[in-house]
Image (cartoon, rainbow, N blue to C red; front, top):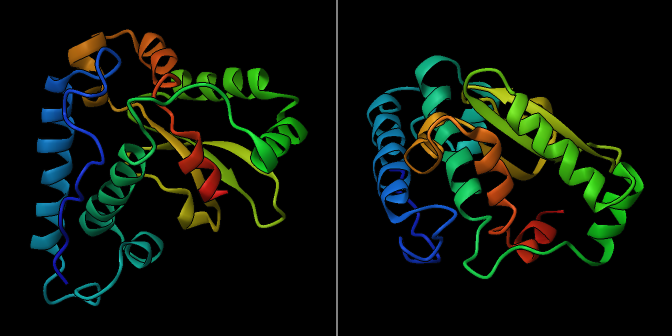
Length: 191
């Protein structure tokens, strides 16, 4: 199986000012593409040669895991955005947020804190546990909650390459701005 860089549903200049064209050219066009290329170079001749990314995430280690998880994580992250995103979730998903976090503003504050306080590089995730309850988890490096039997709903990439060109070392500003791009219809469909 050959992995490919998925197409974006928006143009490289459509997420400005939150994410600049230059950041997308590097983050999506170079970093994401490098993970795809690396994975394609690593899997031939292994038991993961024809495996889907989810199997690689659950079972692989080392470079195959790191690159496979980063392909999946970045795809999931980039698919969460819309130039007309923002606002708040609605319906059943909004009710689940209220039930598990007390309301959207409380959820947003807790999720943002998880993203800002993750030491080093990695991901903040909103996940659905097997009992249906929502939870916020931090994963360092290429970590992915699928590995722990959790269902990913939303993620923020807090590797510096995701924001450094636009925000330098101001991770809190980047995290605060990302909420303006979230496509809640996509997020709700993952719920």
